[in-house]
Amino acid sequence: MLRKTAVLMFILLTLAACGGKSAAPATEITLEETDFSFSPDTITVPLGKPVTLTIRNGGVVEHDFGVQKIGVSDVSMGHEEGMSHDMGAMDLDLHVATQPNGVSAITFTPTEAGEYEFFCSVPGHKEAGMMGKLTVVAADQ
Ligand SMILES: [Cu+2]
Image 1: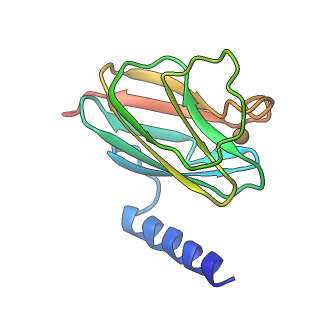
Image 2: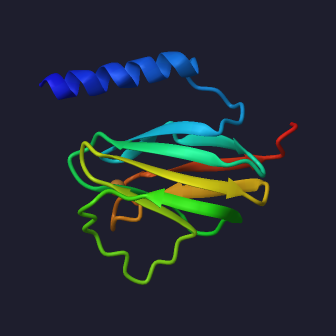
């Protein structure tokens, strides 16, 4: 119970610090996963700068964040222990899984401006609406 309260407090503080939703490019973004959506489902990051996504899974099943094709360099993923789902033949440029009530992080530097789809690659989740849009914009825009 205490832990849940602490997590909630942290989320509220984080939201307050970020000043809510914004279309401005950000290099540190927290994504909330639920069964079955991402919040926010639209994120904007600057071209050529390291971006860190912190992903919190508030759902009751495992979720992940994936982008199939995107120009990126310096990708590092902070996987949690106990990743269970099978990626099969899926080949994703960005991918990080998060256990229920868990937190994961992924850092990458976008190398091509554009709009990309991100989604949860657990079978059926994307179809259930678990997807969003990642926009990479030139840094000086
Ligand atoms: Cu999912």
